[in-house]
Length: 177
Ligand SMILES: [Fe+2]
Image (cartoon, rainbow, N blue to C red; front, side):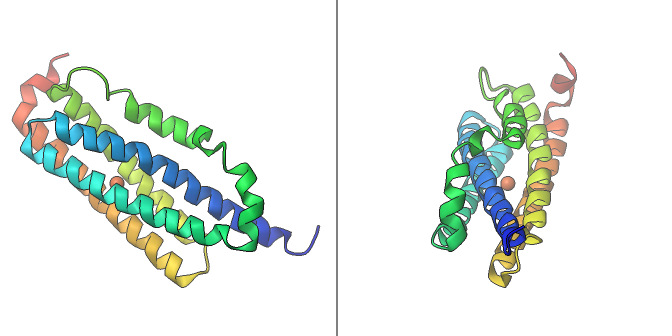
């Protein structure tokens, strides 16, 4: 094995994770923006609107980190394998769940299902960012990723609060199939 190969693999894995998360934040921005427009429930409107804004900021930050890497020696080699990232199995799995409720009428049931899916997604994003913070020795990058983890944890709590509120408001409707 050539010297530096382990280091290359480590850097490569980190860059890939950054790109995967960026590819994931994009559709989340779209869907949360759409959800905040399509619901008349003020609580849901506020929460989805906030998630859309936060996800935009996360996406920008991830791009900044990625751009930094592209200037580095490893970046140029990694570029070739980044084009198929949107097909990554993790993204397909999560986005499939995310997008399946984004069509059709936006009734209480849709809002509830969408929020439940986001409860899962936000928790997953928090775990991913925590894992990524462990993948880098750069203290600034580590701090940014831990901050992103914190944001996603807040989103997860907000999703749970919204679920509780929706159950209170639409309880009977949500039990009907
Ligand atoms: Fe989020």
